[in-house]
Image 1: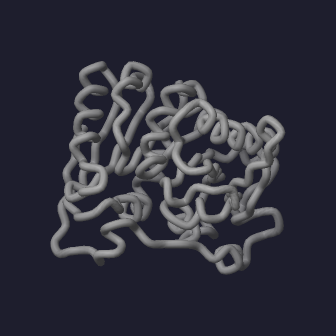
Image 2: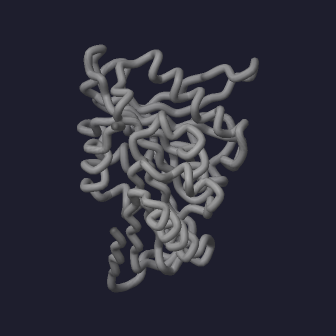
Length: 249
């Protein structure tokens, strides 16, 4: 299903162009029970320590079997500090509802982009460690990301499709070569019609090709200007209800 949602007026220019956001971990973790909330973890990949962000729901217990979201940052949030990757996109949305957010959220951090097998291994290594250390529901693991992380959502979701119950790319670069591997997994794709950094036509074409191949994809196009569609998308409670209902067959 394709949906086009239009708004009247303009969003603030800075937010429309590149997005703005961030979280104060101290503020976001205020009132969080010990061992929950936002934190920075370390995973060793081929002898190299890489930091990543993690959110554990406030009501987590060892018997929880919590659903998991893996979030892939944009290229500007790359590095190895484990924090800047939580500052734009899903991190601020979680922080706004931290007391009740029901998902474990994994925030892998690449040195920059998410292209190639080496970068994919970073995301999967972080997911592997979280699933080893915490009680999760392996049937409900959603991969999402924005911009270059949206491309990573296509590519990593295709390469490791048995690991994920749904994909949610936002303002993503295209990945036509992986279309055959994206059939069979539920997808929700978001884009602004006025995105002049990564034009929405690429997402339109991904939608057309995946649907033509028999895939299960919904394309939601906002009538907004600029690259930042993620604040609006991640602020919609219905998206997270959809994520919770998505389960691997």
